[in-house]
Image (tube, rainbow, N blue to C red; front, top):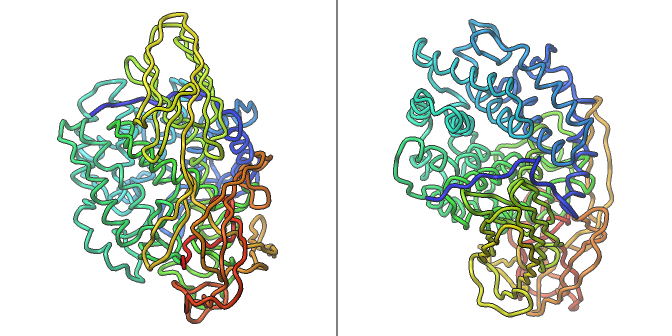
Length: 603
């Protein structure tokens, strides 16, 4: 297998619409959690009293979760204030580390019961900080954390339990990082211990075929989203054969719990094949990170195709346009976002999980969502010993002592890409081409589509490479005799106009309902899909001003509501018989439509 390394924020900077999106996140809820949220600004991690034990039984997740996204965001934007705030938290965390290396906020006699997953999480976050800053003190703190836990395993009989047992693979992220820099054998032994003590998800597959209204570790959607990287992070460290287990498990999960946009349903555990069951936001960003990790360890391009689908569709869909609020759950067919004031339709989530809110109950997503956009931006380019690989056609600039590469594009909203390359030293430049490309133009010449373009650069050479990616809008068959619409990496939805109703809760919390005010009960009735383009505005994924849309036609039908509800559409329409005249409609990117119908009947 081929391994790749991603660049750091000192080398790779976002540009264009991607930088705009990161700035929106920094100016939104994520960028001010340390100023307004007691679970961050009064956390026990920094000497306060909050976030010691969340309702789910996870101790202290929120500060490391938040920093895991806030740190790369600050450095990608080169925001001095944000970088200073992040450093203050890291310095405080390290200053509170015990002499033997223990760092988690608990009494010494509680260590054996402390959930080890938090150790993995803070290790993963410190890895990100070290990559951004090269901070030696932080590296030594990270080393001591895992040496301490290894000693507890060897000498005190500690074993993985609760969340740590089901998220053991997260511990392999910092273990790999430490082993690459030290080569010490105890890290390999610790990796083997984690793998042997951790849950084996290949034994849970029968539980995934018939989802239950029952909370279980084995079917918890975030555990599953994290799980995909389980083999990739351990096989080479232990010298084992790679079997592509993630693909086998994903195939089964998509068969029984898949969505059009590459997610697995889980509200909060696996929810089956239904466009009106949701997916938790933590699962979106963790699934994205799992695919990013698998590629780094295997070099398999198929995971990059899947990353595009999630990043350009599911990720922006779960926030309001300014990223001030987010949903715990997103639904493919979401014709309203209103409280039920009764038994919710979700399998294991209570009422309100689908509202756009600053969550007071599900703080995991409030603190964790921040890793999504920054880590995706950092995965735009990668390298091995001799080559630089452009993984995603997003606007960015790579500056290293060996080369400068500027990627100028509005992809995924447009399909042309310009690469301006300056070689300070000889190297090979490789451009990944998505597998779903239908046609390819290189420097004005039509070319047979391939999975990558390769260019050898001599020292001092400069070159401009123009690439055109050709797609046609297409209908995609979905289960339940429904249809989705795709154009390149973007899926499209029927947007539903809405009124907002904001409710203040106990400060600083609030929630927003979206009440539909346009027709949603439609069926597609045309084979034509005509693309229209508009400028990318100050909000790239805007429902009111989308930079790309598709024109087609639809007809009203009797869709109906899910039994017992007036704000959730039925899983499938009551009838597909037209009850009105054909009308023109405009479909917009899934990620831009906050209320939407994505899986529709096609007559």
